[in-house]
Image 1 (tube, rainbow, N blue to C red):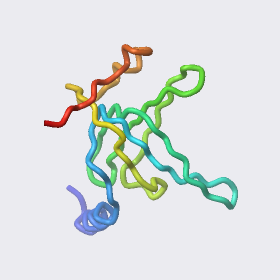
Image 2: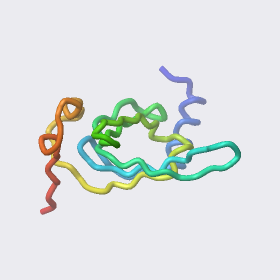
Image 3: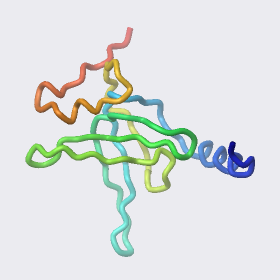
Image 4: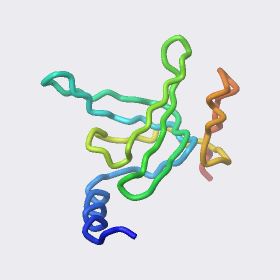
Length: 119
């Protein structure tokens, strides 16, 4: 049971942010604000969304990409964070699970996800 003031504050936070519709299996490009000293820049993090969890302002999603030297890199982003400049869905994936943690054990072509075809 949440306090109604906290709930109204969270509703205002959620309403002010423009978030596209995406789910696990989709390839997303997340533009993240990075602060270095007194300068800020935007860095893109592109990979497969392997999970979405939580609700309201506490909702988070995990993005996995293969970095340098074939090392898997995962980042967990709060969906309504101020450090996220924007989220872009690059391609839709066709999966039958809501959590794709099994991708951590797959390498190369075995880790590919089929693209969702529109009718």
